[in-house]
Length: 354
Ligand SMILES: [Fe+2]
Image 1 (cartoon, rainbow, N blue to C red):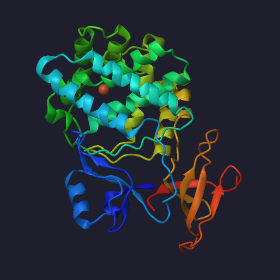
Image 2 (cartoon, rainbow, N blue to C red):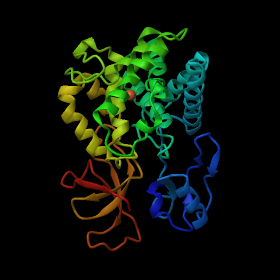
Image 3 (cartoon, rainbow, N blue to C red):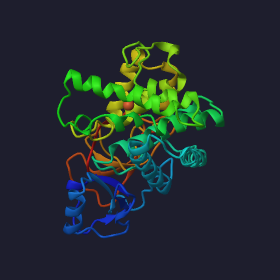
Image 4 (cartoon, rainbow, N blue to C red):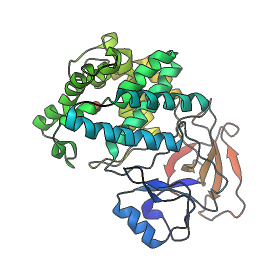
């Protein structure tokens, strides 16, 4: 299977992963043959990408570090908690705790897989999907840093709820499609303090979990908010979440900008990282990311175009590529594969939609 933009979907392609509404109901089930009416319906639901199976990709398996069902349940839980909190400022701690345990179990089972977050998002469900992704990315980084089970649980709980303060920020500011004014940005910044206040008053939530809401926009060099804390004065959990949060935000489509490519985001994080992030945490974070995930279309320095069919964990910029188009643009009938760890003179120059 491979991921394509919905606008490039064609009649007759087979859907490879089910698509759900933000309430967790199936919109279109895996295995269905696409028809124009289905494509229109997905478009109306603001779905931008889908997974399909076609002649280039039918034997390609895309593995994710958590199960689709765990992810679906986690998104519904965050949505319910945010709705519940809006009404009562309270939520069921036990449900969050079990969800985080489930996510940790999935991650432990899939320890050898590089992160290829295979979530399909709509622009509307950004906060729920984002909270789950940031949780997964932070937990994997925490595992690489050697945190014990209890700390991982506290980290996971805090990350799932890190943006809960947003329920108290006016929607017209949160969803504004154009640049924020200074006053509006000041308003958004308050989600850190508001979220922290809410969590620290919730029974059973540890102080370090609650602190993530307060500290996840602080930056290592003191340029963050709300308290402009610096270096090790920022709790380790918040230093982890800061990187995961930026990574997931930049690799997602937002109302005001298109997502960036993974290799561009990694470069951005490494460049910024020297000042804004904790370097040790950043290195652990990057080691887990599939820079060119399985199923991605790429252009090689030879001019050939193909799809990633396998990644090399130790050399993430040198995966295995199945060549679909020759350098003159003609299509191959028999696909050859190039392992870039064995062809060091060939480089990936860009990612494309094939
Ligand atoms: Fe935030």
